[in-house]
Amino acid sequence: MKIEHQQNATEGEFFVLDSLGNKIAQLNYFFENTNTINAHHTYVSETLRGQGVADKLYQALRQFVQEKQLNLHPTCSYIAKKWEREK
Image 1: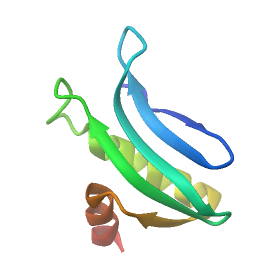
Image 2 (image 1 turned 30 degrees about the vertical axis):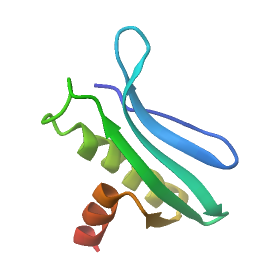
Image 3 (image 1 turned 135 degrees about the vertical axis):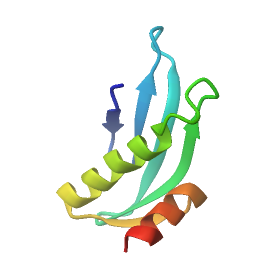
């Protein structure tokens, strides 16, 4: 499974595409300022649930935050719980 990432100056997302190019899983964020991103939404299609896809999206986010030396403000309940456990 390939986790893809796209972003612009104000927001971004990590996502998974199906064979037709439709997003079937995604984690969205926006920049609160130049150093902080707000992870506010996670979605996984029913066809992928129970396969650890949300965690894979989270791990991609975590790596991005570390590489870019960003602060994370998670307002998505799933991301907030994962982030709090790892502190």
